[in-house]
Length: 146
Image (cartoon, rainbow, N blue to C red; front, side):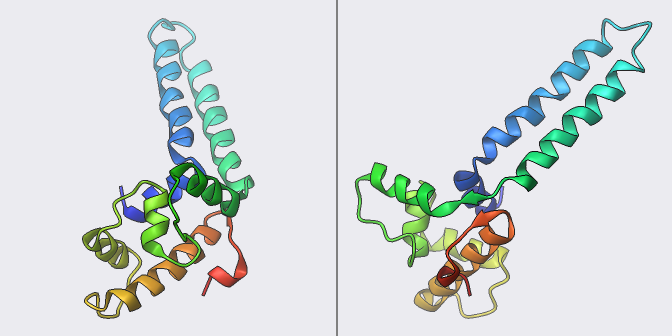
């Protein structure tokens, strides 16, 4: 899993979305085993029905990242400034915030600057992550993007 996907899933609740997808194939497998006579009709109708609501739910929902991250900071008991620091954002989400992880994130997001200049890279990463979160259904304060 990419680092950005880990960030997005930590904020948007990605593993909860993945769980219904994993449970959908299991019921499909169960009906197909005992259904020697009417297998074709029930299995195809249940599979598209399960995939349509799962696809519609994440697209329709807008996730306000500010209260989620503020609450995570409060729970952490640390003074973390997720609004301005990619390191603090990653820490509040309980993700590896080390330089190697940030370099990998920079690569994923197509950073073309010098990764040895970590201060410049970190500022760019934070803005890009905020922008990408907004592009993926997150409500992000305008001043945190670009």
